Image (tube, rainbow, N blue to C red; front, side, top):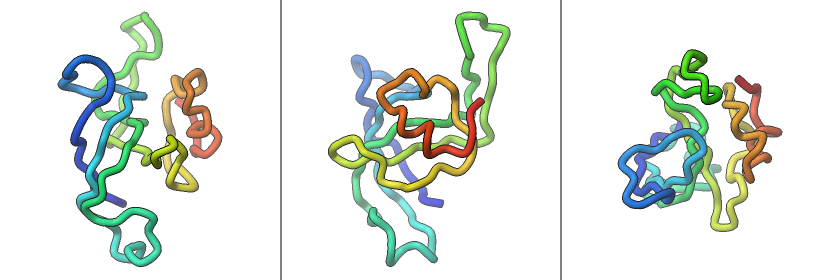
Length: 113
């Protein structure tokens, strides 16, 4: 598991909080011990990413009664051309990504909620 720190949120005018699907700038803080030599990213590197999971309540539609949460926050790293850096996503993601420009995230992920 890589530890990341959100540096900047691209969407909107000086947005304070990011939501599902937001494009963010992240700084890599820590890498897994076993993956350090083969990793495509290095410690201290700044990458772009898309938020795929949030601990905060997310709503499926305009109906506020149907909400869901995840156990952890998660970001998918992207390169300069907005292609995925990783080859798989472990854990479920929201169905919201089916209708976005990041449809490749859905095909790589383990499941949808």
